[in-house]
Image 1 (cartoon, rainbow, N blue to C red):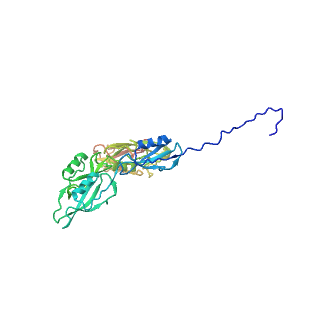
Image 2: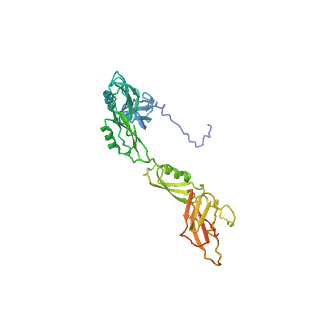
Image 3: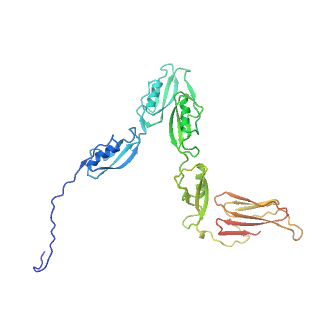
Length: 393
């Protein structure tokens, strides 16, 4: 660059530090077969760490690393993270039972934390020997599940016992009753809206069934009622139905809103996911819709279309019945108008609050009115008392 000799000029120089040092690369060690603590010990000197842990069904002891990513031998830079899968210990390998005695098969299954579900086949040969098994030997199944075996017995010699009925009983005494009959127990868990947590909600075979001794009885242990579903945004009729299926009831209150249609659930208490006892009540806040959506206009006395109600009465009193939709008010005379001038007239008054979620609401009149001519006065309140209609006839 040409500059004037007398000019004052600053020149910036960038000085090299030399070539960049090559990155340090480590070899990923093998973590499979060890514990999480052992994995951390192997990774720390290499400036590596475990960043993700997930559980996997496996027959390895609980807490054992069964998979890793990146794999062992992969070249990685310091600071890299490793994802590992850890065994939950829920699987066991099914032993080989065919051609073994029934007693030996039962012992092998007990050692493997498995149950025995036995059936018999009459044959003149190989009495007491396991002829078939399911699942097959070597299969991995959930710990505590039952293995079905077919045992050979001589004709007419198959011993059986009656399965106790333990549905509704706590799991501990239920297990004791079944094992006292020479049977084994396999368990599983499930939600139940009927049975309390820790009690038997179902069993197979059912109580009273005749089975071979040492057979397994599968018990389903209740976890209690299913978690409360998310009802927000659901039509209130559908929300009531969902709660009824769980043995719960709804307490409904209303709130005006301009951004939600009428009869939609805006909030619930308790929140979704909570487990409630059967018969408990869930508070629902339901939208009444926009106030502009319900215009309040005068209705001529004879004009149709007031939201469908039938007002039925007799000399002994009256009743106001509400059904969904629009109203139609009908008056029935209890008898002929009295001939005398100024005859006394009885009056029945009914005040009604509409419930849009109910199929019908019935209101009964005051005590009997003995006068021959009855006058009905009806006051209808639709939702909150913002729309009020009166029929003086």
